[in-house]
Each structure stands twice: as C-alpha cells, then as structure tokens.
Amino acid sequence: MEDRDKNLWFGTENGSLYKYNRIKHTKSPSQFNHSIYSIILDHSGYLLLGTNGSGIYRLHLNWQTFLENYSITDIDQDTAGDIWVASSKNGIFRFNGTKFDTIAMNDNMIYADYVNSILIDKHSGIWCATRKGVHCYNPEHKNWTQSYYYPDLAHNTANIIFQDKSGNLWVGTKAGISHFAYNDWITYDTGMVFLR
Image 1 (cartoon, rainbow, N blue to C red):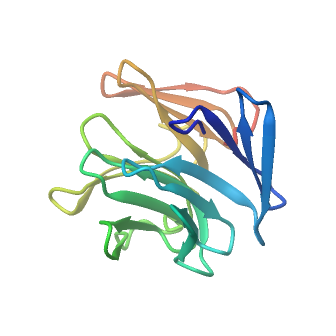
Image 2: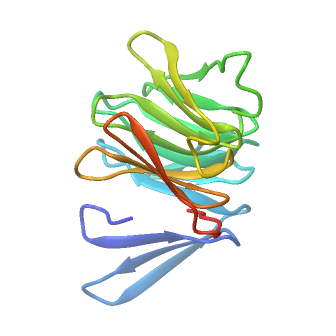
C-alpha cells in the first residue's frame, strides 16, 4: 500500500510491518503479534491493518486497536467514508467512525461468515468472497441481493475479489478464476489456487 507521502507499507505473515521510504531508501520495521492480512489508508489519513487474531490496528498519532481477538482478512472503504471489514468466522462489519455494526448473513449462506476478501464496487455494492461462494450486500436496502456458487464460479471457495477499470468482477478461487461481465460468469479453470 502506498501512503500520501509515497511511502510503501508491507505486512507479513510473521507479523512484521515495514514502511519503506522510496526517496531516502530507508525502512522502518514494526512487529505485531499476528499475521498482517490487509493494509489500507482511509480517507482521513489513518493507516488500518487487518490482522489474524488481533483485530484491526489504526495509526494516526498512536496505535489504536479494534475488534481485538478477531481474524481480519480484508478491509475496504466506501465513498461515504465507512470502513468495511471482512473476517474469518465472524462475517463482515461496518465501521462508521464511531461504532462497528455486524452485518448478519442469511440463514442459507452456510460458511459465508468465513469472508476471505471484500470489495466495494462502483455502485456501492459490498461483494464478499467466502468459503462458500460470492455474495453481494446492498447497504442502502440492508439486504443480501446476489449469491453465486459453483458452477458459476470455478470453485465454491472464493479467496479474492477484484474489480477492473471497466467494472467487471474477477474472483480468484481454489480451482481457477471466474470473471463476471455483462451479467454472466466466465470461468477459467487453471488448476491453480488463487490467494491474495
């Protein structure tokens, strides 16, 4: 992740956080107790880290911790400034700057609370790549609007979701890549597992 001062931030599996200054070619390491899965810079300039088992760390002047003891797999921010958090075993959360709200999964979305990746699309839909398919949440109407599984996807375990400049969705799964364009899924069976 690149911050406003052109520093690069890297998180590692062993809990190391590196800030690399590209101008001075210096690095500043920090150590955390758990793996760092996600790093974003929010609209207010806060650095947010999603960790495996220590929740979210937020850096402004000092480190603050939120959702302690949760395994945070991904973080994104919508145009209104709300932070959306994906977690392993606990689904997704929305942080409005004051409090965290849990977004309940539908009863038929078994294992969907294991969210590997979260994406806010160009229309403000919240897409979740989960252990059991890909699901879309409409925050305006507060409901789950779409769910996709194998054979639409290359595999039910979706590990990462991405939107390209044309607005098409790409999902990396346990068995290949799936591409959602023009309301249709195209699957590329690569035989490879796609992680973040």
